Amino acid sequence: MRHNEYLFGIHAARQVFDYDTTRIIELWLQQGREAEFASYATEATTQGIPVHVVPKKTLDKLAEQGNHQGIVLRCKALPIQDENSLAELLATLQVPPFLLVLDGVQDPHNLGACLRTADAAGVHALIVPKDRACGLSPTVFKVACGAAEKLPVIQVTNLARTLKFLKEQGVWLVGTTGETEQDLYSVKLTGALAIVMGTEGTGLRRLTQEACDSLVRIPMFGTVESLNVSVATGICLYEAVRQRV
Image (cartoon, rainbow, N blue to C red; front, side):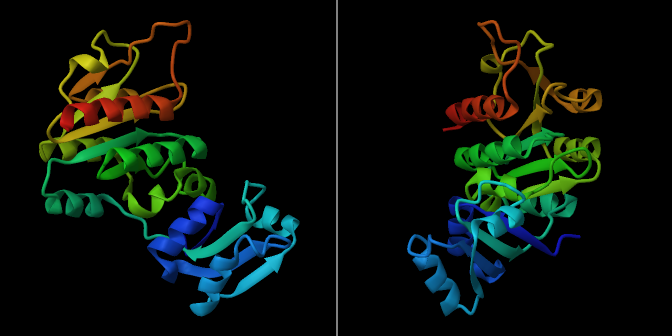
């Protein structure tokens, strides 16, 4: 169980201050950049949050050499959402669910980028497996630019079982693979929908493919054989958005 987590970067910090300052335990700022972050320091002090002004090397260590941009926060970890949270979400939605499933994405930059795009596209929740996949690391929060604070990230112990549950709830599962003739632009992406994306390199696992109602490919006209998973996710989500608006 995660109790605390370090977040870093200007966008991630701004989102926490805007969305829920009760999560913030401590704030660290880089020496020499106090004026740049004066508003953060003032707000933190007003709310009784300790503020530390430290050398850059201290922030480098706290951020594990990530690009902290001069600001690091220690926060209470967001509660982990699970299968029960998914059921509650589906029960409360007043519109057809629009979900994104990532089958084992390992790279935190890719996960953060997928989160950011999913939030922008109006996705209701992101579903990921607990094992063999990237978790919500500080890098994910930074790349997501605040989306991790707002978009529910549901971590499930058994992805195949969760996909079966979604189908029982009337959610149509569309998986992506290069091993099909049906292209993305020829399928209906309206109604209750989950877009299912595979991991970097190997794509969807066999059981995940078998659980999908439909498999599609993104047309490729150049010499490259595949796209980065976050790029492919953006293409798929916004084709769904185009059809749904």
